[in-house]
Length: 503
Image 1 (cartoon, rainbow, N blue to C red):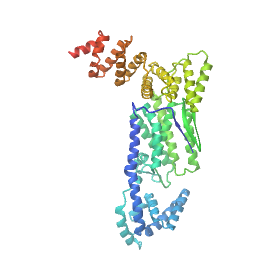
Image 2: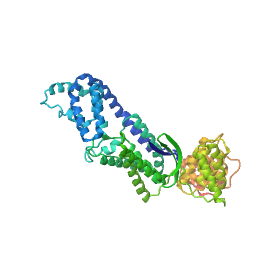
Image 3: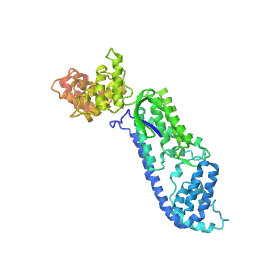
Image 4: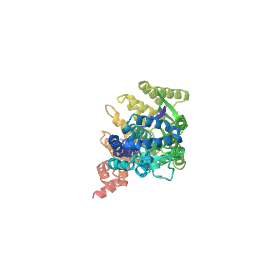
């Protein structure tokens, strides 16, 4: 058993991953709204079936059906042996539930193609069936699942619908955890609608590869894991060779490691092929492989035509070292990273602090220091890391989004409270104006306005804020700043404009 999940990013609820949450909600609604009630209804009817007398008429035919499947596929021999044991022990209720999972046989049975009119037992069977059938639920899971023996042209919609079905609560919850872990990062990078499109295409690709690899065999496929495998591939292709911290589990051994992201793609794919070769054990590993392949190709194609802003702290802006001794810098960073990987956060906090003295403008140092220092929100290190991060150069939209996320993290965690100097405030207000984060921009501008001394950049900062508000048609908010403008920037065009509108 092997899996590896990234630990580099955290979701920001300031801009929540609502499409990822919506997909999770839909999967849960499908399971608890239709699948689980159907399963409970089948269990109730199983007891009625065991008392109905139908088992003696139908189950010999069902066992012969399973014998035919076992001759076609050796994997079905175990299923046949289990059914024969249940028949021998007269566990008719369990046999009924097992038969429910064989839609081909049930369809033929209810259509009168198994116990025919020429059969001496047909009249008795028809009488008992007339009592039993009306209480049975209409099949839902098997209606929308993907059948391997029916090809691509029969019910092609199931290539997609099967990805929203699950076989159990554990199956559902396990998939939803991995969907969230990979999904929220991709949604931040792609935007909700492109993310949704690629998720659905990964699901289709996974189902297509699964159907191709299992063509003609008995059984059916369902589950979101193929589409989620596509998200895993998209994630590592997006980050390419950048080193990302992963948590991994190999049998009973687990640990943390920093690996180049793209290295994980062949590892994921080889694992799925190996598991399929070893026997599958009831898991559709070829759907996982198809999802990985689809996700990798889709993300590579998208990145060939569009530049993506990878979220959080994995695409820092470039910064030049301020130390002449590059060896000392690299050794300091490596030690800090090693202590972080070992989860020795107290020592790592000090080590990153030392590294930051050598590279005080490098996000690759400041962001991991800020992450570690969050374990000590009342420490000087946490406030110092936040100050350096929040005053990094405003280089592009991705840098502004990262600054905004760090700002909210700092506000939430800082103890006894945030320490924002006037210099930090005049840096942050223009950043938030460019992001149209008006609430935060005005909040910080209010702090500047109420300060005891006027910062030299306050008039320019104020006019920038109010110009942004007017350009966004937020006239009421802009008008609230008119007294401050008249006091600190009376000659500014925006001051004259608002004064005219007030009249």
